[in-house]
Image (tube, rainbow, N blue to C red; front, side, top):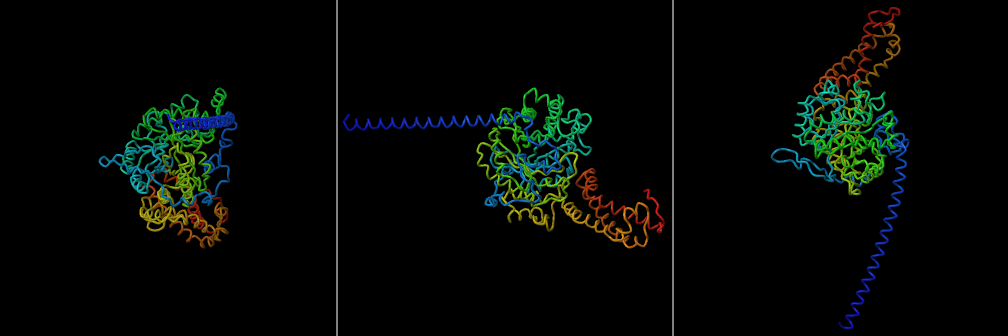
Length: 601
C-alpha cells in the first residue's frame, strides 16, 4: 500500500468514527426525549384516572334531566351558549372548502352486474351516506317505503339505518314489546327486498341500554329499570337485563342475516349509577360510572360480534365523550365497536369535534361514524323542517370530514343523516317524513357537491320536481316526489289554520258578546250572533273539507294511530275551537235571548 493510500484509509476510518459518535449522540438524545414524553404522558394519564375514579366528577352535570331534546343533543363538552334556530357563525366553516366535491363511496359502484347483489366495499376513507328512519313514531306503511327507497337512492344515499323500536315483530316472550301496528315478518322481508333492489344497505338499530322506554314501560319489566320511577334506562346489574336485550338483538339479527353493521344505540343512559345495584357495584369495584357503562356496552358489543362473524357494531358516542381513552382501551370496547359522533346543531364547534376524534384515535378505535340531522332535531313538536338550520349542520360536518387527514390511524366509515320522529317514546311527533324530503335532498346533495351550490340545486330539482328554496323554507314549483300531497297540505295547515282561527276569534261580536262566559251560561243576544255566525260556519266548513282530504292522504301512508295523533296534536286544537263555537252559536240562537242558564253539554 502506498503512503497516499494509507493516509486515505486512515482518513476514512477517522470519518467513520466521527459519524458513529454523531449517531450515538443523536440516538441518546432521542432516548432522552422519549423518556421525558413518557413521564409527562404517564403523569397526565394518572391525573385523568384520578379524576375518573371520582363518580361525582363524571360527566359533570350532564346526567341531570333537561327540559328539551335540543339541550340533550348538545355535545357534552360544548359549554357555549345554545345556538338559536337557524343561527350560524361565519367562523364555524372554512368556506374555501365548500365548493370542493366530497368523495362519496357509493355501494352502487360495486354492484354485481349479473346477480344484482350488493358487493360491500372494504374499509375505506371515502364515507358512505346512510339515511336514518326512526320508526318509534309515524312509521310509514311498506307501500310508502316502496315509493321512497328509489327516491332516497337517487338522491345519493348508500344505505338505511332502520331504528325499529316497537315496530319490529318481536315474538315469543317479547311479543308484548311490539306495537299493535308493528310490521309483520313478511313486511320486513319486503323492506329488505326493496332495499336490495335500490342498492341500499340496511343497518338495523336496537337499543340495549338507554332509550328503552318502549320496553321498560311494561309492568313485566319495571323491575329492570335503573331508576324505578322512570322507564328510560336499563339496570345493567340485574341478572335478567342482559338476557332481555340479548333476546331482542338476537331476533333482529336473525331477521337480517346479511347485515354487516349492527347499531346498538347505547346513548343518553339517563340516571345511570342511581340504583342501589349500581351504587353497590361502584363501591365494590372501586370504579366510576364510565367503567360501569363500558362494562355493559362491551358485553353487548361482544355478543353481537361473536354471534355472527364479520358483523361490526356501531354505537352513539355521547356516553363515551368524557371517559378517558386509556379506560376505554382497558375495557376492550375498541375491538368490537365503532363510535358514531353526533351533533345536530347548525353551529358546531368543529375544533372540539376534532379533539373528540383525537381522543377516539387515542382509545385505539379502528374507525368512527358521524351523524348529522335532516329533520327532527330543532323542536320537540316541530311541524315544518327549517332548511337553513340543517344545511348549516351539514356544511359544518363537511368541514370536519375534510380534516380527517389529520387522523391517519382512524377510519371514517360514513355519515348517518338522522331523521328523528320522536325525541323519545313518550313524546310527540316531530316533522313527518314527507315534510322533510326537500331537506333530505338538500343535505344529500350538499354532501355530494360540498355545498348546496347551483349544481346541487339543479340535481335536487330534477329529482324532486321543485326548487328547494332555503331562504323561504319551502320547495317551490311543481312538487312531484312521493308524499308531495302531504307536504303541500301540511304546509297549508301550518301556515293558515291557526292564523285563520285566531282571526275569527278576534271578531268583535265574539269577543264582546259570545265569550266563554256567555257560552257557559247560554247567554247571548241573537242579533250579535247574527253578525258572525255565517262567517264562522263558512270557515268551519272550508277547513272540515280540507281536513277530510288531508286525512285520506295520511291514511294512504300511515297507520291509524299516527293519523289520530297528528290530527290531535296539530289540527284538532284549532278545529275544536271552530266546532265548539259553531255548535254553541246555533244552540244559543234558538234561545232567543233568554236569561242565563248553565250549559251542561
